[in-house]
Amino acid sequence: MKKILVIEDETAINDLICMNLEVAGYEPIPFFDGLKFSRHLTEHDDYDLALLDIMLPGKDGFELLGELKAHGIPVIYLTAKGDLPSKVKGLRSGAEDYIVKPFEMLELLVRVDKVLDRTRKDAPEEIRIRDVVINEQSRTVRKSGVEVSLQPMEYNCLLTFWKYRNRVITRDQILNILWGVDFEGESRTVDVHVGNLRKKLDFGDVIKTVPRVGYRMEVS
Image (cartoon, rainbow, N blue to C red; front, side, top):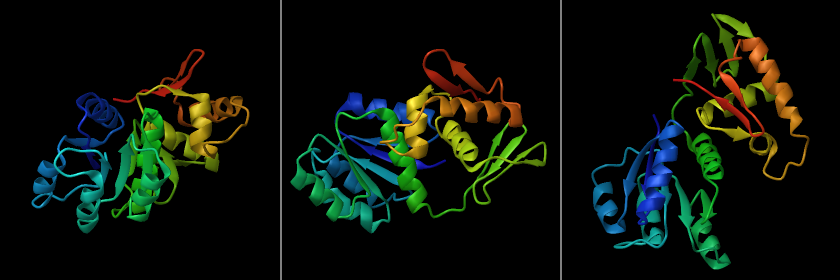
């Protein structure tokens, strides 16, 4: 399980981020003070990513970035500082991404996934959903040991449902994740992919329709 630091001094925001990371299958580790985290980091550095606020007590995010980079931990800034000089400073100093508050939680999770994919050091693991096994390295899907042929976008759609499992995702959100944030295509395209996945994988009771909203993959 990926371990993600949440270094944010506002308790409500920190708790909300941690809760959503847990639902998405990550292990969040919260910190509320920059100096206390800096002391902790000298002895513990086994983390996959840091979500870092800039305006922190003790040490600010700009100071902590260098320490995190020295330990090989990629950073996404989460901050209310939306001015251009702060963005440029954050990205030029080595942050992987820069997100301005307020932000949509799904957008944060998508960006977390993208940074982890870009910086991952371990081999992709197999994903098991009932009798279906997804191998990310070979991009193959097997059901009861037999390979199932999926179109590239069907495969990507399946992975999207897995990454945001047990969460409701709208059709527009799925389109944005698969084709890009500014995609303006027909949302019913998603219904076609979902129908194919349900038929090929017998996932009629796994990928559930949420009326007038979208879909939810239900897995335990």
